[in-house]
Image (cartoon, rainbow, N blue to C red; front, side):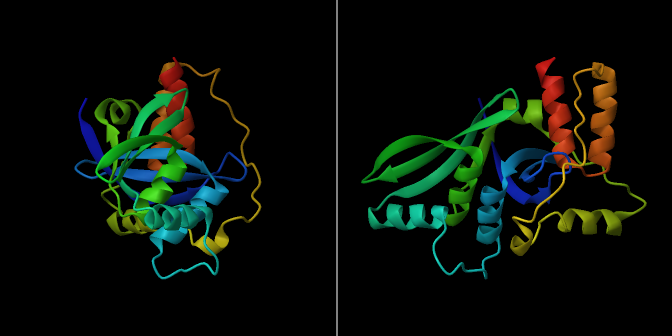
Length: 206
């Protein structure tokens, strides 16, 4: 199976799940986006790593892991999102010490938070992107607005941890596949990536 390199597009608030965020990964050599629902702590850790000028007064958990790894000459070489089961992504951290390579199982949010700190590339397999990736449908008549909305997806770290209300308890089990595909298109057009991820997962279950 061929690997596809990913970059981080940003983090958006969950509109349907209280306390959760959607991490948006972007296909480097393509147009597809891979939304992954993550927790508030991991979202904050990733956002701080993205904002290079922000330095927490004390090391966060992922910073501590990096300091620990560096002290013992352990290098994170890459992260691979290798499996998708029932809407849950599974990842591996590829590490090296004394020219010996080890593979460590990790939650995808933790793996990406560490990849940022080690400047390690992030990959997934083509079949996972084929199954879970979505296309962003921009409106050609409003290029400036679309670009601005995409750029604004990344939330400022100081907003993390604020209490949010669950705006929608909607489930999709009663919808037909055709209705789900229509809802998916609407969610993508509205750039509601977290909702799109949930609909995509329901389609995958069918």
